[in-house]
Image (tube, rainbow, N blue to C red; front, side, top):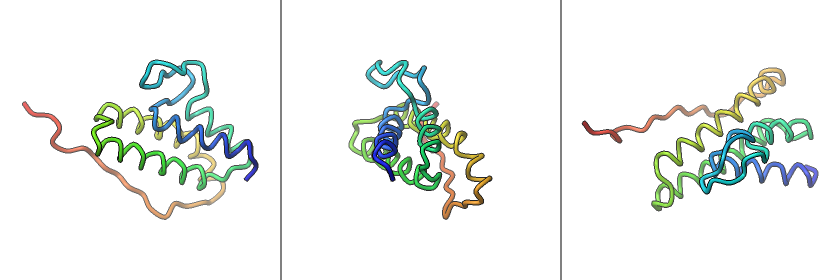
Length: 119
């Protein structure tokens, strides 16, 4: 992988953790508006030759960071949801590339959060 793609990939991970879907989103601290978010960065990485599966691996690594931060109390449910929305935005960009290349994923996980609301 070329150096610029590595930097782009790292920014994808960072923006997933910050919950930034696109350049209009703020991060958790209220900054970063106007800077590329996950959508733009995924498109950039694809245009620079990074394989879709590789991008997905990095997105998974970012979600592991989000999960650990949730476990330690640093992140809360809204933080996790923002990160999940950023992942969803990135996957929408990746979807046509996955179907056109014939790449398949080894695993597909669907999850929900249970028991967080009480009435």
